Length: 333
Length: 158
Image 1 (tube, chains in turn purple, blue):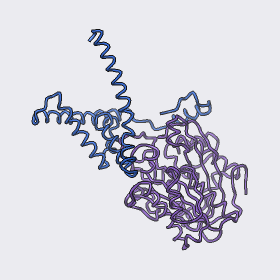
Image 2 (cartoon, rainbow over the protein chains, first blue to last red):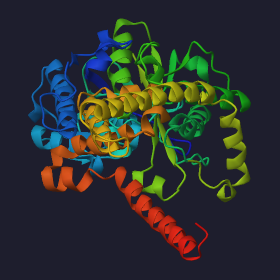
Image 3 (tube, rainbow over the protein chains, first blue to last red):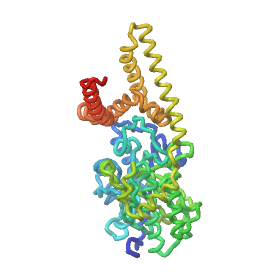
Image 4 (cartoon, each protein chain N blue to C red):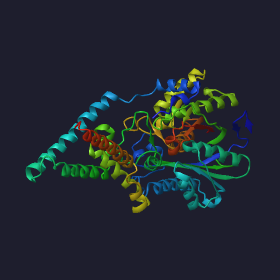
């Protein structure tokens, strides 16, 4: 049911019957290593290109989620996925492997929650009974796509972020046990004039704040409603900005409740600059770490606001500023 | 590279200032110091190689530059191939970018990166992706300087 202008409250709450998070060697050294289903020790994944490696990660995540639910891919009606590579080939190629009817989406790093919100809508509306949602990113493939060759010696500023190598997938069902998707707020595109692609946190923070504020207003709740409110990949800098923006707007979230997936995924001594980023950042933290904590009963209600920077390498070269988006999904144990 | 500030609305400008105030700045003094000692070390190494060629291979000080550059390029390309150069560069910044080693790294890193697209369109088509502009504008500016030199010579100034 549409509540307010951009929030969906699901009438029939879809159940996340299984989820999976896979990562690479750098993630294995990270802060949440125990929450990954598969940790690969080779960033090439035995493949000939980073793009193929990313597809492999996404396949692993999807196949793991399906098998954890004890299902076959034939049991699933739709697959929704997105990533950061040109023409979202890792997602489409994974859909080729899975052979499940497929929606390719592009929301940059907000794809995980965009996909989850849509998948929940399909189930809630009765248009599907099982929907798989996935997303992936690969550090080297993203560097190649957006920045420089991986071995190129360019010095990054402290505002830069580290793209997570990994993939996350969640399997939604109209029945079964597991955490439930309760509501979602679909973000609008916000551009506050940031144009530095090495400063995504500052670019995306206003979008996250806009969506969060709207979510609270349209549902008539405040921060006390949730145990954890996590943004997708703002990093340390973006988190600092978002916190101050919220305070400025009179929204108070206790600092132990407000966090960012990009700050959670790596250890402080890992050289990731401002923090983690990429589609997989919000995906592995949500579908791995948060799902485990929800199942253990450590968390009851969470809100994940996945943030995406909707730029392209060309738009940046043409001196465009960076439009950003954030989608919030509320999940309850 | 921030976009031209004058295109932004007042609200955007206000936010940019708000965000800037919270930003972790590039540690410029530290970066300069690191660039100085690493860049200096590379140049000292180059000098040592040059002396070596003069002393043992009968090169003169004028033509020892060519084999010296070749050795530095080779070292840079090997370190790039081993995946070490970018880590040194994150530490050293301009210290590894400015010497000829930086130029070799741009070509080698792009060639390695695009090998997955094949030797012709991948390696061949992309290896000058970063170095290309340097070559293009280097040649143009060299041409301009040469014209100035010729003109000054013709006028009898130099």
